Length: 116
Image (cartoon, rainbow, N blue to C red; front, side):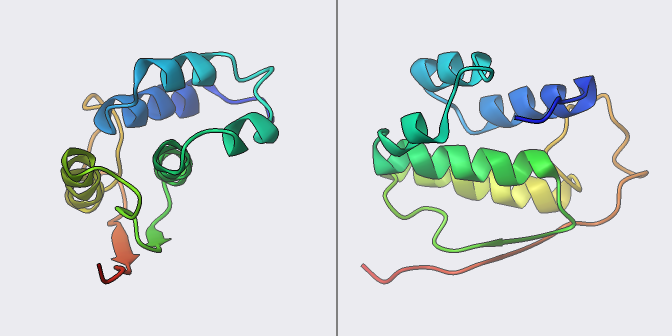
């Protein structure tokens, strides 16, 4: 993993809180030095989905394109993810409250859905 600056780490932990990361995923994330991609592949699909969404939010893109962001997720987590997507657009990124929203560029989210 590349060396992360303090602002990126802070944004990453904020994203984990917004997405209601389970405690064992937070512990995995805390040990980023030893976390390998193979370990992520052994997680359930819903947890892998959360990790991929967290990575996308943490990179803080101006345009975020997501395929089926709630697929594989339990209903209560679907609500959390959709709220996070809305907040990402409304707040111009998922960043801690101490960073000024006005100075950030607008964000756009495009996502697809999967029919049940």
